[in-house]
Image (cartoon, rainbow, N blue to C red; front, side):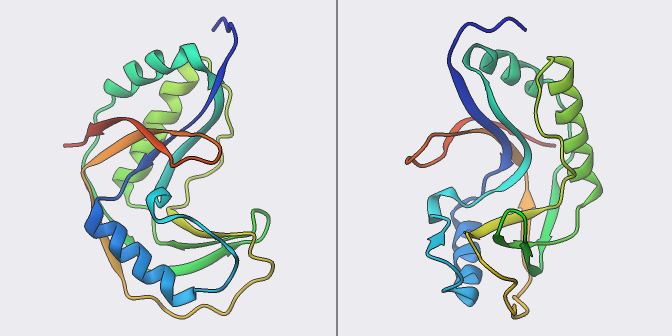
Length: 172
């Protein structure tokens, strides 16, 4: 892919509706005070595939190939808190349903076909709640959150601004 200039920081995600967002905020409240870097309410999401900085002119192509992906809806169960020491983030997560793994695999393959270069780390379903968490906290057991997934989205991360939903796709 030939590149001419600007970059956009992109990722595919499951974007919560207002009811699920309220549930995420409620559970984040159970571990309040871990860090001053709480993820803003409007940015809470579950990343499927992080693309990072991509050429601005590739956005239409990315959306085009994502439109060709067919996947099943699935229920995501978020039932535990956790901590990634390298990233220093606290999260709410759960097991990966087969349909979620298939969606991530299809998105990854489609982005590779476009020739995009990105960090293809393994998918571990989680919603980041706090950043800059210095040490592993003692977590309570959260109430289970059942999140029915009927769509996925392409999101743009713009510094010092809410994440921008560029486009959503329904799953069947």
